[in-house]
Image (cartoon, rainbow, N blue to C red; front, side, top):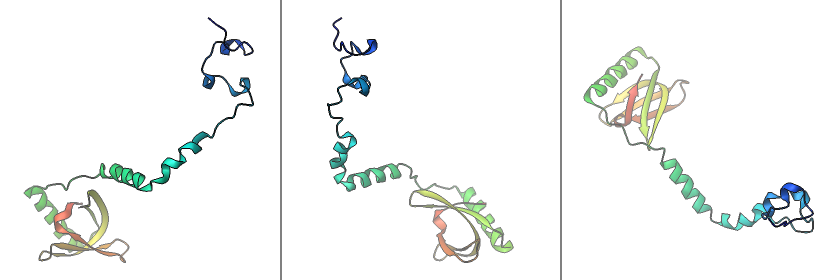
Length: 138
């Protein structure tokens, strides 16, 4: 084999790729380079990164679960019990592709408008949840 770098230690004498040779053995007058700065012009399109982040986020979304009649009856029985006893309910509902869990008091069920009026456990925050989006009540 031909000796390419005669002034270097034994393991680097035959090395042809300068990236595999430690910097202290290389010529100090050769510039190091700009490093990662050369990639900065490619970050001029923030919309591209926003769209990629949105694609990643959309992969975590799920379709709205379909409940059987028995499951709906079970949820109905639990809701009636929680309203009468004024017990905190662990309510899970579907919203925009995610299942959201909330601990709250169920105040009223408005079947005409299809909503459930709830109060968070701190007593201050009130909210409305669509009856059609409720997944479970514990």
